[in-house]
Length: 242
Image (cartoon, rainbow, N blue to C red; front, side, top):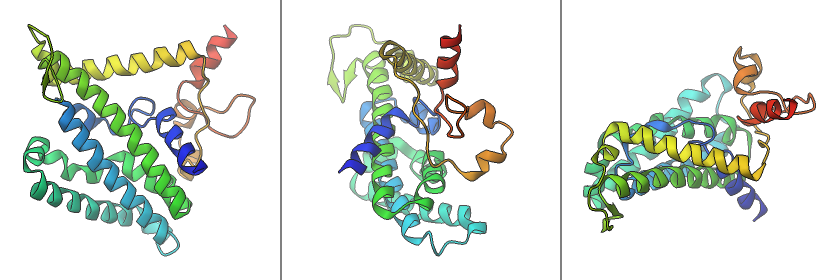
């Protein structure tokens, strides 16, 4: 249970959308309503869970040189399963989400977890990691969806709110960026008020060591250690020095 609890905590403290700022395409495109956002979150979590488990189970058989194409084939397989199942059992949701269901195959969150975690850890830990990251992604996209639907349509999950004049712009493309910006700002404000320092990110790909941008996007841990820290630690350190 500790593994699952730690994975869930990691999914929110290292939230792929609100902290790492990856996988933004479905968040912006599929959050016009809370129902669509929840459907996309569940679909992406299912693909993430199944692909993590299979990658972890086959990691000793996957050659290092062709691991990325293999990961993509695995992810595409489960994405097809989700797409067909949604068309059969939730046609209205499938039509609403449209092309963004097949595009789960190129969701960088799923590929990143396969590369940085599932390929290097056991099946149970990989499944827990997928559940944690999936929960974090779903929470982020549903929050944005709730905000856009409430302000833009005057409803929440289809239930009417006492809003006389909804801000229609919130359900249009600019509203997606506004809503996401509000949610990210709120998260950063809460982090600042709580005084929580950025947590150490583990299991980064080895390619990060040779990347010229490592010093920018993966600053060193406080004290000069080699462990990378999450985004925000640099600004926190700067605040302490000033």
